[in-house]
Image 1 (cartoon, one colour):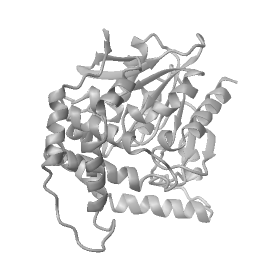
Image 2 (cartoon, rainbow, N blue to C red):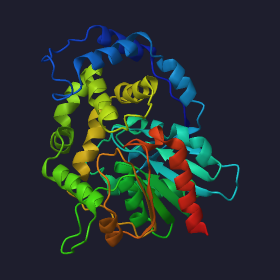
Image 3 (spheres, helix red, strand yellow):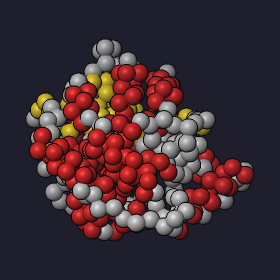
Image 4 (cartoon, rainbow, N blue to C red):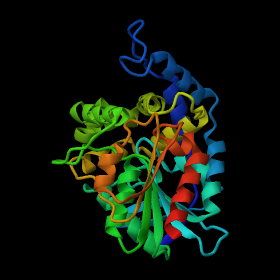
Length: 361
């Protein structure tokens, strides 16, 4: 059963947020350390003050409620999603998958260009936002992908494409494994991974740098990732009890993982943070890292299109990627970082459209 969904956060929850922001207990900070010890105190204070005094959740809530949103239950879990039918009756359906610390909100700027070509399905990953929290273990990338296959079947789509970045990249590729007869292609913006074992490649200078960066991250897992992959419950206490803690946890990544020239608005950042805060899903979203860690990166049996962003966390090595995956389109963007749908929405939408047109032709 599919039910219409309207966002309606209780006013008491918004009042509680304002009260907590007013009573923030701030940490001290060493002089002159900049970003070396984490997101600077001054930046977090600036964002928190804007959140407390200027940001308007009700305005953003009204804007989001203009989208056709729904919920359904799959495998015992509530799944929230946006479903937009294209004016083209015979359009190819396309499911868009976000990652962490993102949400379905990151696709808002690509809805208009993509809905001209596709029927769009934009779900929230179980454990995130209005699809959270999860209520049992096992909700890793593969299980999310199987849920997406059920969702698309429930919507009457037996042939469709997939796109995603971050965890959404793995989900999109795993969806092609879960529903190989339905997924015509997967388009992704993030595909990290070690080189294929037992094979030697001649790499140019750029790919050698990319491989060194990938190996560095494998050997020295980032602190946030190590914590979420091993102790998501422990970090959940802090992030669920302190809005400033939740703010700093996400705002740091929105700064570090983006192109310095990108212009992601404070309002968008705070809407994302507010979504995690108001749904109390920081912990259940973090569990996706633990539930997925250690599994092999899904290899899509469907054709794969890849966009490489110059300021992403890592950049895929083409020779390695093409050895493992059925890559039919490879695009190197001049701008953008990890949140491509927010940073370069027009370029991303154009590449998605070009990829699926290529497959259709």
